[in-house]
Amino acid sequence: MMAGAGRLSFTNITALAPMVRVGTLPMRLLALEYGADVVYCEELIDIKMAQCHRVVNEVLDVVDFVAPDDRVMFRTCEREKDRVVFQMGTADPDRALIVARLVEKDVAAIDVNMGCPKEYSTKGGMGAALLSDPDKIEAILKKLVTGVSIPVTCKIRILPSLEETVSLVRRIEKTGVTAVAIHGRLKEERPRHPLHCDYIQAVARAVSIPVIANGGSLDLVKTNADIEEFRKATGASSVMLARAAMWNASVFCNTGPLPLERVMEDYLKYAFQYNNHVFNTKYCLCQMLRDKVESPLGKQLQAAQTNAEISEAYGLQEFYQQTQDQLRAKRDVLQSFTQP
Ligand code: FNR
Image (cartoon, rainbow, N blue to C red; front, side, top):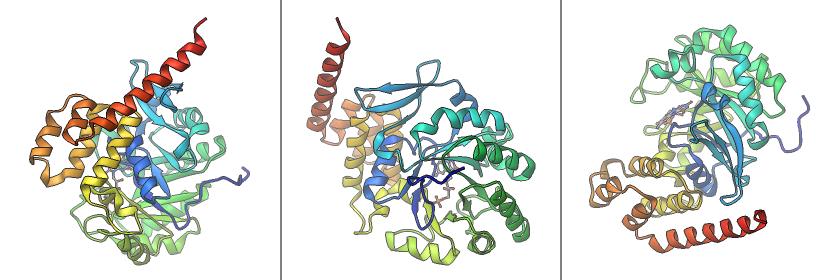
């Protein structure tokens, strides 16, 4: 496989981690705007993705992957094309390749989730269940590496011993993946448990592909400056942030944090512009509000049933209306081309 000029690099980058429901298009664009180098989408399950068809939405200027029930499973756009990593949940090499080929032209890399400890993932042999089946890991990654022309990566958790962890990542490296992200916790451990930076460090020393350190939010990474400290503490090439970015994506800004109100407003502008599903928008804003979710704003947000109502809660009615008018005008122009 030739390394093309535009191939996404995972060396010395800061990434938005994959997060179910959080890592949809508005959050990814916001993270990029604030300074993230790479953005992962939420984990999408191979079986569901394999049923999707690719639709170009000219009004929104996006590419959608739409399920048979018309649900948009994955929405992406030109702005993130060179930076977005498509993360999938899979336990089947053939199906993984079908999905990777489906999205290959629209994303910058493919990632396989090997760290999710939730039952819905592990019961199908996906996520963290893969960690105890290295033959399956190898089969999936080899199939993807040889079958697509964009970088392939995976995201793992650590194994009970340092030796096992290093040996697994060495085996992963041999499959030809471009990078590996390591959440430095065991699959049984929860986010409140301390991170095993020493494991990430040992792996980073043992392999030559970039290692992306993950798991530092809350304790180790609170500010932009902490990202570099975390990188140093783990000896990794790169850093990936989930919760710190979900709470306030301006953690990616190297000019300092922005107030949450501003971050929510910036987020909402993308959500309106790209017609994000109202429930997803609400979910993300509630995550940002954290303990303020019962505040008057939080209550108004929770009561909102439409994007228009959310815009009222945030005093963004004018922006919302303008965006709607622009989209309507674009739709009319496009329709006038297609109608006889
Ligand atoms: C996650 N995480 C996760 N991991 C993954 O590989 N695929 C996914 O879809 C998700 N989904 C997800 C949703 C939410 C809301 C959270 C908080 C986390 C795990 C995440 O990527 C990361 O590994 C951990 O949160 C640890 O990193 P931080 O939060 O300490 O930066």
